Amino acid sequence: MEKKLKVAFICTHNSCRSQIAEALTKHLASDVLESYSAGTEIKDKINEDAVRLLKEKYAIDMEQSQRPKTLSDIPRPVDIVVTMGCGVACPFFPSKHREDWGLEDPTGKSDEVFSQVIDDIEARILDLKSRLQQPDFFTKPTLTFDLKL
Image (cartoon, rainbow, N blue to C red):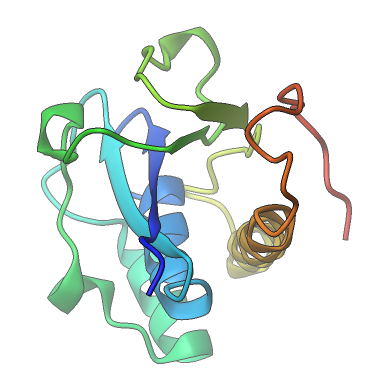
């Protein structure tokens, strides 16, 4: 069996976008990726709307399987770092490949906006999983892209 690649999803507080990405990667791409998430700072708990909506849509209970973490909690080395759109607030974290997904933080927004962000993260995870099949994945220049559904 081939060793899975480690991916770290990083955002500012590790309470919403990066947590969703970690959970969905475990759900959709655990055959090729070992996923982690972290923040430069952390909140006391995972965003309640994120927990509720992932439970409704995917039957994933993030409260049971995940907790807010800082960068020091991620086991190294990491193959892929994905920043969620925290701009200059995102720290450097060593990896073979890095990309920024530029996602808006849905905290405090409507369920519709939250669901759009969740759908966007799902599409990006499936796209990343697909791109990993390309032999030149780690040698191609890293692009930050705007995936429109």
